[in-house]
Image (cartoon, rainbow over all chains, first blue to last red; front, side):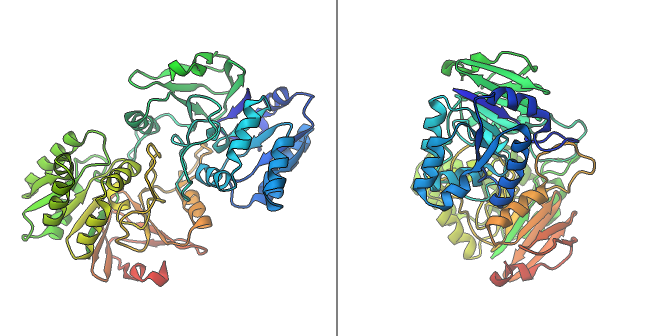
Length: 242
Length: 242
């Protein structure tokens, strides 16, 4: 499997995907000419696809959007997935993304292609989608998906946009670390708190943290551990470690 | 219906329920001697019940916890609900709270008692529970409830711990206002962004904002409106307005 999972599509003070463009080019390589975009995390799919298309064209790739195929029916959507050279799932609301893919019955075909080696890229909600479930999203549950189960392309959970506790905050809502601790009160899986600018790259049985930010890895029952860009995280791909 | 819905159980710099104690006393009055506590939003129910019991005893009320009755079986849980003089649902994780009440089939009996006039108090997740759905929670979806439908004791949604956008933030995750706008991309219902310290009190067809903080009310398709403690919000109880 080949995955490129971004914590965020945009880092503060830069434009859409700018910070990640060298990693995207290196990941897709010269073999890929067109990318299939999954826009379902945002409400205005056409506008989202136009924005992504403009950005990928500047990177040298053509872009088709899955919502356009889906509007022509299920057969066209399946054909788009089966013919895709690579997939990029954009960020937005993870519940909306997962609900749409489950309702359109496109989750299993996407999973099968990624498991067979088609490069899969995600940003934010699109990275959460690669996890076993959406249970570590930060998003508001604005729609109810049939199930919380997602693609399961890695055996651990990602918390995108991971935020360190704010010193001196007077807000009484839970910190991100407290939320992940609550997740571990109910679930076993390891959670990678991926700070904005951090990227996970999977190549078969290798997993590496790249990009410009670190990650905080939470295993159930033990103290969290910090990782830096360049660190090898392949151990997280062993089911026993999750 | 008589409801007292707190944005938070604790305001920064004070102890559990301190800021709200005069409102709790005025709401329960001299007629209520014992309160039935719903502790399912936290993992350690026994510790949570002990904390709530200590606090309510200092306020002059006895406290029974629904988890103790539920451990003796469904008949005992139903008897506790049917015999309750008042209910208080504590804060924590809204998904965990709703999942437990649905699994134990206690949501409908609680709803029936509240609709028949039994005083219902909630804090944070417990206030969200009084809404038609949990769709405006800030919590992480650490467990999957059977459904997102909740008690529906008011026709609008509450977003507890409502936070104003932070000026100068470099974080790229959505602000609370953006999340509520996303909710309205998919749903019709009005959302009350209830800041910490804010309390909604319902008495029949009257709804009032009390406590020490304002609320920001989001109606689909129009600009949000600010309300101050003391303001009358009864119009929100008209289904047409939601």
